[in-house]
Length: 320
Image (tube, rainbow, N blue to C red; front, top):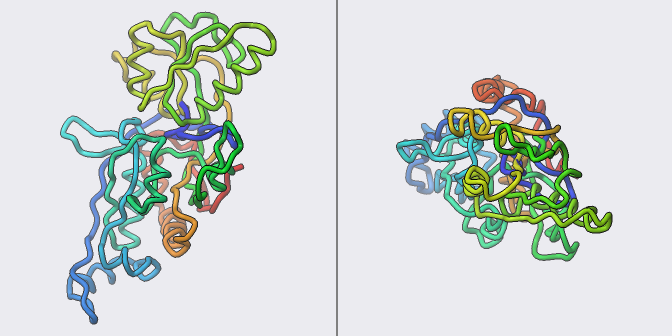
């Protein structure tokens, strides 16, 4: 699937490199900071002493005890709600581990994927964490299709790697083995993702070669796209590989879908932070490096069977 385990964007690269199987994660609970006074409360002091990197956070976030996370919480196994309504997935587990290092709670707030960066710019969120592919276009605030500046760019703290896959109904691939086989076909996907960027780019090639238009139907979330394909309303779907693999494994007890062809557009997922908030960005980088070093990151990645997408260090703006 396209990027949200890479929800990415065009020019750069799509959702991310080979990630083995897929998995889902638990929600986040962390030590909240107490009420702040000039000297700090006992509760805050206790939280800080238990969190080795708390002093790296901006004071406003440290005092609030919460990092507000914009996320499209309908992208299993990266982030989604379980049967009880609890937010779970790979991203929430990683955020939980980061919060223990920083002494704050990461509070996930739901939003459609294509509005997350806008919410970050308007300060509705402190960060966006949603299988978002780190691309140069997003770093620079450029529309991936037109190349025009559309707003302030963001910085990314890269924490995972994944690629984009095509999937079809099981036993009915319509002759689709790669992106070039989509000419004259209909594909469903999530709006604002790398999958959409790839489909648009491939459609141009199809039209130039006079092989027939690719009909692209974009939805607010990936689950809606899956429903459309399941009902026979399209020939194929596309998502980041981990998301596609999870759908193949779980939908209809493994009887609904199959992945066709190879992953493409390997790229990093990044936690998006406003360009002006370098202190928060650097705190997140330090916390991610810490959980990589202490083994917590590896446990989370292994827990969900996505070892192939693991990173060995926290890079800033490593996308291309």
